Image 1 (cartoon, helix red, strand yellow):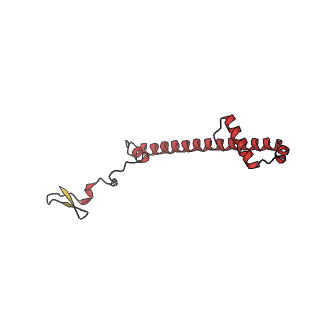
Image 2 (spheres, one colour):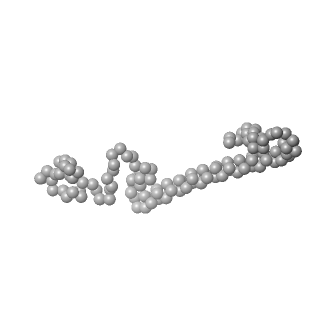
Image 3 (cartoon, one colour):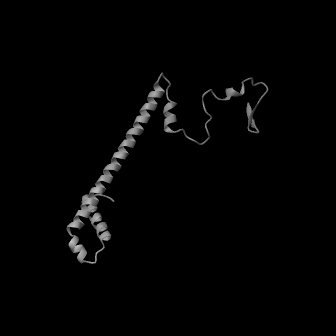
Length: 125
């Protein structure tokens, strides 16, 4: 039986195990209330030769694929927004004489045209 005394493990006189036998070698102490992350959970699986490395490689590939997919979606969204801006500016340039003759503010008109084009195309700004 062991009891904690002053942060150190105290043992009964009959316990002959060395202090290092408390935890198997290579196993880190686990903090209470903390769940292992996905990587640790995968690496703790069956330990056949090379299987841990293969699991790690598969996990990293999945994460890289997900990151690439997110990057591609963001890039496509930015490109669509740039096309929307270009179309709004072109539309305003086509009506530049009318805009100059009126008291309309170019920035406000650009914002309104962008919103209208986005709504028409099903695009969320």
